[in-house]
Length: 358
Image 1 (tube, rainbow, N blue to C red):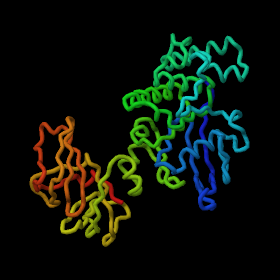
Image 2 (cartoon, one colour; image 1 turned 90 degrees about the vertical axis):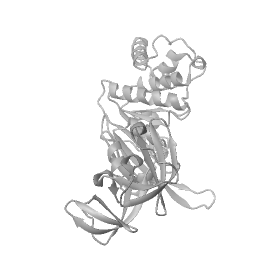
Image 3 (cartoon, rainbow, N blue to C red; image 1 turned 135 degrees about the vertical axis):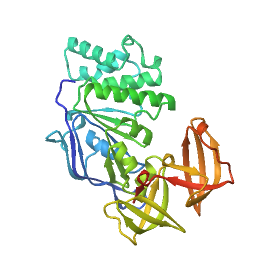
C-alpha cells in the first residue's frame, strides 16, 4: 500500500443503549480512550457483551458514539457516514455477492467509486496475487472453500486501499485447522501491506498469534492494554489473567521482604516470589501461576496431592490439590521426567520470577 498509514484515536468514547426488559439505559462502551498506532495490528478481546464489537462498529461508522470523538489520523470522523471513512471491513459472514465471480466481487467497491477499468484490473490482479488467489478470477463464490471465500472478502477490503482495515470475528465460521492457517495468512498480508488493522475476537489464541497489541475489554471498559507477552505474563487483574490463557491463583500474605524477593505465607507454608515495587509486609496478595511455570518434585515446602495425571503426547497434564486449592500444571516433554500418578503426594515448585503477583 502506497497510502499514508493512519492511526485511530478514541477520545472518551461512550455508547449508551436502553435495556429492552427494564427500560433503563446502560453503557455498552463507557469513557474509552485508545491510541492505535499507524501500521499496527491491534485486537479488541473480551467475552460476549464486553463492548468490543460496538467499539469496532463505531470506528466503522455503523454506530454513532453518544459521547466523545473518534479520530482517523488527525481527522474527526463522528459525522462521516461509513462510505466516507477511510476504512474497510471484513465481516464474519464474508458478505460476498453470490452471482458475481471472484474478480467482480473484489472489483465491486472500485466500480462503485468509478475507478477506471484499467486501474481496476491492475489493482484486483495485484491483490489476488497477494492473497494467493491468482488464476481463480472467473470462479463463482459457491465453488470456493471457506478459506478461499474469506480470502476474497479480505481482498475486496484491501483493494480499496483503506487507511484502516477492520475485522469483525472473520474466522469464526471456519473449522479449527483452517482458522489457524488463515490467521497466519491475515498476519502475513497485514505485515506485507503495512496497513493499520483492528481485529475483534473472543478467541484468545487468535489475539495472541495476530497482535502487536491486545486491548482487553470487560463490561464496556478497557481492562488492560499491552503486547501479548505483557498481557500474559503481567496481567493487572484476576479477570485478565484468567481470560488470557489459563491461570492458577494462590492467596497469601506478605510476611517479609528480603532484597528483591517477597516471602508470602500460603496457609502453613512460606514461598518466595519476586517482589513488586509496592509490595508491603502484612498485605494480602494473589500469586498468578501459569500451568507451564510450575513443576512437581518428590519433596518440598508446598505439599500437594495429585488428583489428575493425563498423558497428552507433548505434555503431561496434572491437577493437584494444594490444601483446598486446585492447581493445574502442564509438564512438557514428559518422556524425560518422572510421571506422578493419581493419589501420590509430592510438592509444587516454581521459580520466584516465574510467577506474577497481584
